[in-house]
Image (cartoon, rainbow, N blue to C red):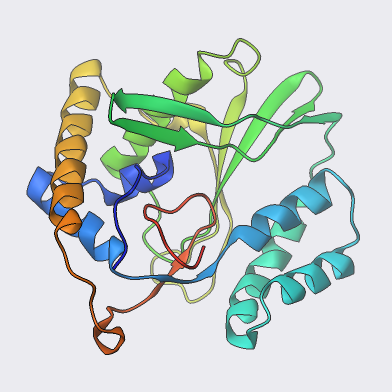
Length: 245
């Protein structure tokens, strides 16, 4: 049985937020009980190799196949890779900069990690890309507004990044469509929350997280033949202590 040993990433926080602590708790527990079956992490490496290092596309494809040797899961990663390539073919940065891990202090016992992959500059304008590889149900509505509100607060602590354009790259399947498509959103266009709205949503999530952590601490290990359905990891930091990333 997975345990809630540490808080999730910022993206997972807003992904698991619901409108009450009890509903949030249930989502957190359900996610903790389903092990990731594969990870999107190789795609983050692939983006860096193509964008920063200029690695030829065929070599990136081979890297992904080596990183995920199971054909069915490699196919999922490889169906996204051409979309990434088409986007990056139109991006010619003047420079790149690695970003050290950041965090958002929600409470003394809840420190939320935030790890942007890279920031790049074109003509003096910094861009911070953020990829969402979930197949369905991308961030939207109040969770997306909460995400961007917290991103703003984190970036304002760094004078070098507070003027950067935060760019959301969503690789999900649009409603009524059958294949993934890239949707690019400028973070400046996404509505932010008021302080009261932010505090209300974070208070609900924090209470749900604490309830889930306490409840799971007392759970017994489930037999392997009763394990819940598995799920993919987005490679951006999972919520729980798992054997598979």
